[in-house]
Length: 312
Image (cartoon, rainbow, N blue to C red; front, side, top):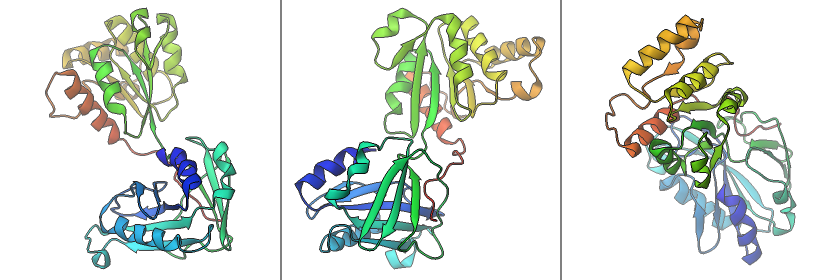
């Protein structure tokens, strides 16, 4: 998301080019929607480094020699031509930013859709709320008249985190820079002073679970086993979430599952509970170890179906 803040600042200083990843296939260093900015002397952000980025920056600086608004769509097979063995493909849009045509930035925000229409010598842009779909890294490149629509910032997994103790704080520390959007809750007023924590009445915590989007990961690690159970019950009796995790031992898992069964929760729903949390094989009990093992586990979840760009 940094490019949204950097772009107007750099464009006010002088010529700037933008490199946008439109689509990828196979093994590629960054995904669709990734951007970097290039001036004659500096680079901001990265599309993954290596030979691909070196060539793309060369193209960006070449575009700066042309009129503002000039654009090119470039395809790069990540093979011998670039001295790489990844085997993937990347389709890039390289453009000389027209500083007079940045009005769309005022509406741009994470999760909204940026619509770009390729015109002769310029790109027309506006922002709306969708939809967006996939653009291929193969076949005909987008040409004049093509319309590209992409989610700004890409997909970030919502993480509904219940508990602001040592492990919760460690998870919050390590979320920065990951494709995760944190919603952090606790029922204890003492945690109101911690940035990012929303203190909710215990009776309202279950409503937070009910309101979580289906693609959310829910992680329960409160100070109270009774509250843990009520949140777990709420999570397993609503529409399935992408992940329902509960901190604890195998003994705690067995007790919770037995109680859930007695209360009529189906076997299918009970199977959605992940307890203990974290990648198997990571045995450390330190808060930071638990946090990193959990976040790595969440990063393994299948990505949401919404893709980054569409050509029409």
